[in-house]
Length: 427
Image 1 (cartoon, rainbow, N blue to C red):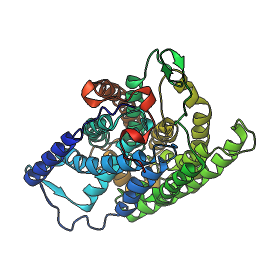
Image 2: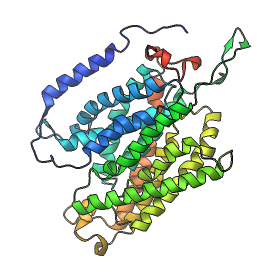
Image 3: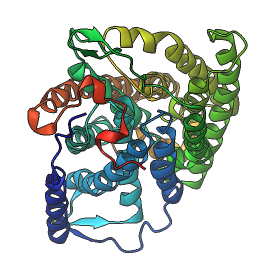
Image 4: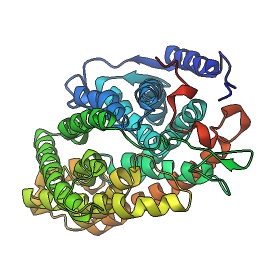
């Protein structure tokens, strides 16, 4: 392998870090103690750096990159996202940073890490960092549209975070796909040579990936409930998320054994990922009055959608050149759309008798003190938020992917994919 990379290829990222420092000096001030008791920050922080990081260590020779780039990207995006999100809510040209704004930045970094999962091993380090910077700005714009313009209820981020991150990644993958190239067997002077397929796990790497899955599973209720505003809403979000995760897990195990190409055996890909789909699927509705049984039903549906996606849809996408290394379409994309559709249904069923004084906290625009929307209008705006998110994520992802193919970002050759040797000094 020819080492074409220079010692200072990541210097532009340090320049970006210095620019962030200047922006923080100019715009950011401490926000006082008003939001010091915000829940969910610590648990979400664990999800970002341990959960997402270790979940992506399943590839046999890409564990350094999975953990390392996850850490680097998240550390950069959290700083950038805090600014991008806060620019829409500045007071006197000042951003007041609080524990809540840090939580919001952590949650936004999950969007980019979901995209990272789709591109794991197929995009170079410089491409990933460029994509992360662009995506953060666009995702924050989309979040502002969803939450402030459309005023959709999406407390767990299934629409603005999971759906956006997944389909932005799919859009980038569509732009990066190779045409007319043999993506499985390299050639030398026209003759096929023996090679090891690095796009797969080992026994040990699958075990380390399970560490990420379990951490994500444990802390997902913190992620979904962190931005709730009342104690009752918070407790409902925790309960609904936990029940949905549990139901998705049982469903995943049963269905995995049923559809596996080796009947009766579990597929570790399903167990690592589809068990988490219940947390995504309930995200947009976790603070709503969906009932404990409803939460379990949501989880069962999520498990079915995710396992079927991994077993049948991912291979079909790969055949047409759309690579999705971690299967984020099955864990975040389709369950996120499912959650968005559920939010439309439950918004249309809202009644004053059921929600009472919580109407304005769960559905901001349905408060009598604001827009006073009807249930039907709120359902329509939930649909608009989902549709806009799908459109913006796919289009902006595709454009960003095309831009990342510029020579300065040093795209990986087919033979360099899924290999830590490109970026790391190995023992």
